[in-house]
Image 1 (tube, rainbow, N blue to C red):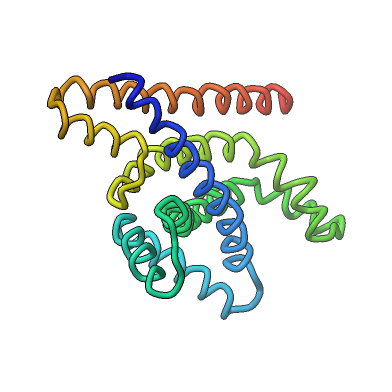
Image 2: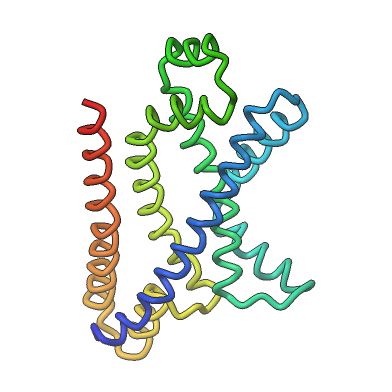
Length: 208
């Protein structure tokens, strides 16, 4: 049983990492749009977050897989990465927004008084003040995304949950098989949480 389920871990990790990369980059672009001086970009960024967060991820997953499938052949793993990445970008945009708004206004005013460029302001003031919060928040989101990757089982992607269900259908033992699958998810979550916590602590120690 364990060996059978373990073979689904690779697909689970691939979906999680791929979707996280899409979410992190696209979320940053959405954040830039929401902070733009152009009203149309702020409106577009806000609408993106509202719409993508307002619809269940499974609906986006099926829409991408079957909708885009009519235009271009999309394998299940690619559909899962794209769909979860698009949804995740809305959540990452909120994480970035919350982190940036946590920067003390006095430091922002000081940066403006020194006539720092936008790039220097973010590099010297914003990012150092948000690093610890971002480390904690992105780790929490990554763990949530790890669990959401199980939705890819609906596309018959041979990830951890799909293989657990296959085993249950073939040999029964539902309690045992899903308990083992849950243990795998817990281990993967810990592998994300522990390093992120250490990074956060080092950042805080460096600022003290």
